[in-house]
Length: 221
Image (cartoon, rainbow, N blue to C red; front, side, top):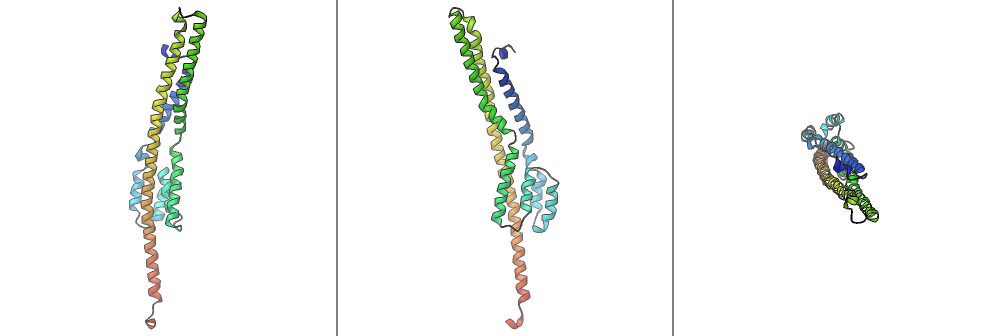
């Protein structure tokens, strides 16, 4: 406690920054588990869907499941009249939208990583100002007169860097994790998209062949 008090008034906002960073890290660790985002039941659903006839059942299951992966799969299952390229683009847009949801509170971590060292620098400057003030009034013969300024300059710098470095590491880790999760969701969704459009193309070919057979008559041969 004495060490903290010796850092001066700047230590208070630095303490607040550390609490915010810790809260964001804990919240994101709990929310960004792979099985929590890419739910196994949705992965099984993708493998169970065989053709477009399974779309209504799959869509009904997705409507009862909340989360980014379910939202992306819903985009795959609706508007199948669009071309494959248009649906792929729709999946990518949905992925970007879900990325924003997964990045919730991460900007706070980025702000803390940027602000903490600046607050530490502010404390350092304030400490140096205190030192020079003590020198101007007491001279160099009384070291205790400016020991407070030295403590403030050092401790705020240590505190600021101790908050900023882990915050930046955590931000980079979560940013990379979110990117990997979104890429995996888009990959699995594309697998489902390919199966549906392959089935759709097969049904259309069979329908065209059936029409040709019905239109064929022996007199035409």
